[in-house]
Image (cartoon, rainbow, N blue to C red; front, side):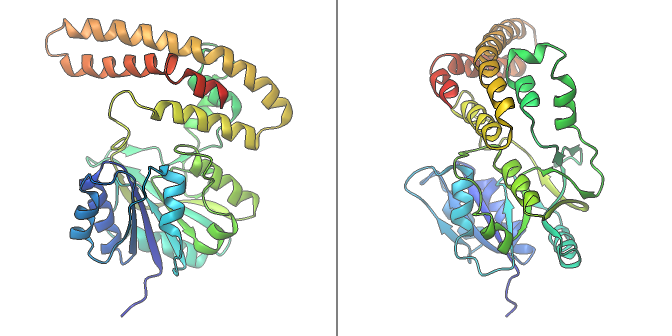
Length: 318
């Protein structure tokens, strides 16, 4: 019996069908599979057992989030590599072998990732630059309405995506050397969700390991399967994680500027989003054939409302 070289680590939350498909794609690529199901009783464990009878399944008593869940899935792995696979991502045939081939022939590479696409073949972003404080302010605060941070945000969101070393790979599919992952202490569990892959890639590069985009490997990523459930704590988690990332990697001078800029600019941006999305939802509601768009804008307005009320103290304390 061939000993697997890769353990696939899948962390799921209320995504039984997708998680089963992700685990199946990993098993078909000859990886052993470890699942962490963060929502016990939703049928995910049963679906994954049916798809991958040999899968190692963890069902913690509470929702661990992505970083801690991934660390749990990786724990005790005896494989040379760890594949972190989102439940809404599946490997295309040959993708894992292409990623392994790069690591086998490039000892300086520590983390590799594939080109991502939607199920209809449309490509989607596969790489990012390190998220700077300016880019985060542009994305989440009223400073985004100025020209001060536009260039920083464009550089972050749309770097040159050629094969070879990059700063950050999207966390949907990551293949990491197990020894490097252990040396880094795994994902930083202070990130419940979001920015943990940017943190891991940056720490790997700081250790001298390259992070490499391998576009000849491809994976299908649908996106937002667990997150797209209307107003939730996820938007607040993203904002908390963004601030933690800035605190960890930016200079003291930048942090001193960032904090008051965020505290001032975030509520203004959330208020603007609330008003805008409410107006759009009302407008679409009276137009024929626009009910789907009206519902989408209503969900976004409710998310902005929650950020301004329930989640505001958590976001500003982060």
